[in-house]
Image 1 (cartoon, rainbow, N blue to C red):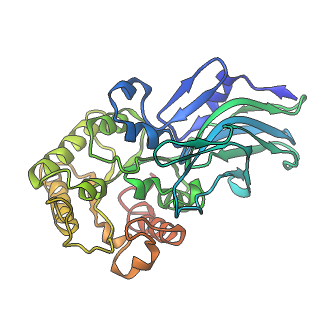
Image 2: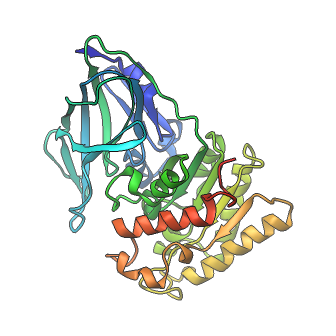
Length: 355
């Protein structure tokens, strides 16, 4: 088999913010390497998960082998987290396959097993095809080698479609979904036939300048901000700082995306109810009011391309059975949220629809 160099493999990634490269591996990250010395450990951990990251190429090879160093996150009670690579051929689901090998890391950092793993696809359809390999979205994955048939042709397959960036909490990262295209951003993007980047940072969407700068600098035709859940979770901000942080994030994004459509999505309905607050913080209901007021202020100031969407319209009181832990939508809940987000924001004629 012929090997594709790691330098070339790096050009095949999509859905990431940066790549950590070395002599023997290349790892996609959902945060910027330059920011790593300044980020807290939580952001670096969840930002290293390859949720929504995929390899895209055209090839006529019947075989593909991917050597990886893979560490799957393991949380008791979340045994359904998928270890599969989701494979699409010519834009259609083909197969979900787990690599052989790999390690697991538990809460607290204890690791079991050997990270080295191999994904082998030996019966790919004949002829030229467009392939996407979506990496396991609850694992850190570094590619250490990639091979195809000796006489086969390959080339990058850039995604030229309308590009939508999603940033938010673990609800957006959505590791409880069954695959990268089945998170709610993935479901909405597939239905709209657009490309998407999932910058959900589980437990770490703190309306930070680091996230705002990524969103500012990434190419985007539309941007989605699911805000509030992690601030509510730990009672991190009071009303004044919550409003100021949200306005600041929008101002940073607007430095390079002056007219890009932006959707600000408030928290979904949690089982604790809209009036509950944590550690003296802002309630979910009040967060919705504040985020709607932020958007209203932007519109009044002349920004006609920022839009508010209540999270309760994506997952509301009638959908609480889709939240096994009271907060995070399961696979069915992600499907519902994605379909509803498409209906409100990405369907033809809606604010974020492709032009």
